[in-house]
Image (cartoon, rainbow, N blue to C red):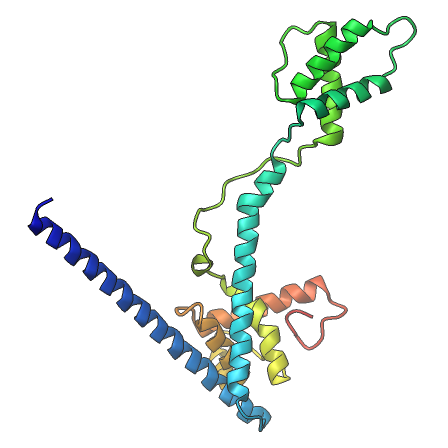
Length: 268
């Protein structure tokens, strides 16, 4: 590599590093701005409920942000389980040779042969050996004689009893499993933050979903707190979409549990 091309390579790497650092700083600045908006929204809530506690707005904002991060971590754990653990559990298990021989011997001892139909010890040894081979993963022979038929039946019974398959693996998941790429949907964020904000404000978030009265939602400080919390994750979502999502979540909760649903709370 010439000196000129090496210099270009170093300059390109430095430029890429600076661009990455600039994006990181811009992302941190935007996150801090959204956090301040959330604190300001809780400040309005505090004025409405006449709280005198010092640092109440910051504490409430931290609780909401922790709830959102908890949902992201839970989604990440579920995705990792579905990608790695569940296929491993559904994979066909095979025993060792000694364990396979033991299972085959025990199963043949339980078998009822009928009068005069029990094979000799030499044939039994061949059946045990062939059953162990099938349990270890050997393919069945297309033309089945007496030994092959008994061995296949015995191996099938052992697999159903000791190594049952739990179903097909299903479609594969994506490879990007880091927490930064786990983006929550609007409904997931609403389910996470709505009950918490209602608990903090000690009141229900009132929303209007009719097209002519959607502007009335902005007058509610608790609804503005919900919007500010959601915009920490979904910046481009509108207040109208949030209001309709809250109404949809509450309707589903009311249909699932109509007895204990009180006052429109989303997750009672």
